[in-house]
Length: 434
Image 1 (cartoon, one colour):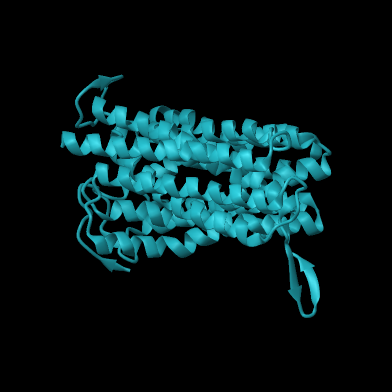
Image 2: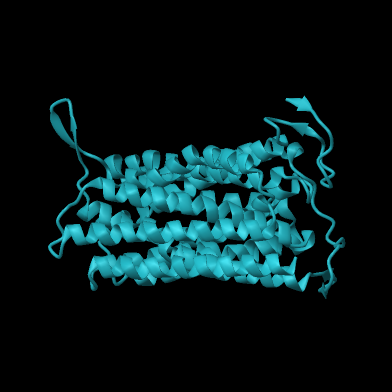
């Protein structure tokens, strides 16, 4: 750990760890454990409802989609509460406690819906202020900010990698309740990390300060930036309609139509279906440093148009991932024969590359374009995209058994391609205006 110059505009002590403020490590670890708990529940949820509770596939898909939607609709209100009343730090703590108790409550069958409600509401209070604290560690012109969100997103996915391996294995092999309990313990560890390291976090923002141009509720808002944020959220909704199938229909595809057998020491073993949910976060951890080096080597300025173009490429890759599943479904045929796991792996490789060019970049744009006094609210609005995407994906997933899989994946392929074209047009218009 070394002393360096003060971060541009941030007013944060200039101590650095690996070239970044140590607060980034705190937020990285806090979010990692929170995501371990969240994805631990998610990895088990569809299997738990269909295999243990005896719910139909259609019912389970709707519940899964509705829960995911609620978990990412609540951040809008959580961000508003953090900005106007509780402040960022208190909101993170209350939200984390709610999620921890929600995960423990999943150990009881009769508490399924109250437990999911606790996790969804707690997530709303937790995510927006924590994400905005990442940006607050840096000044507005600090080029490290975009890379910080990529590193932060890698922390999210480190938790997502460990969750299916730990919670999924415990749930499938030793009992569902053990998996849910492990998720609750993970959230508790995240809270301990956060509470023990408050001194490294940025101070609460001055809610009266603004340097923009139009007043709303006492805070001045730049209308052009607000329009860009709105359109950005709309395009990410289209991206997520296809993306959110990875934990829903793709999980069912892996369980029912993927050859998961593997030869070990002369005998055949079956890979747990939940382990496939670790492919995406593992790839994010492996690919994030490579992509950061690639963008740095190109020396392209992190301007709004350039970031929008990057997101457009990501949406194209997500559409190509669904195209791979169209081919896989054709190979499987109408009788639903099991096909090679390499189809699913190829899907996840393309989807992950697309995700890395959409989500961290979008987080950077939201924090950059939003006024400080409403940064958590704007971050909550960003998660509306995940809410709508999860909701639409859940209801779309209810038709998984009623239409041919190849047609299903083809429908999921359309929306990210539309988003790609729209984001490219947005970038071109921003470039023409500047």
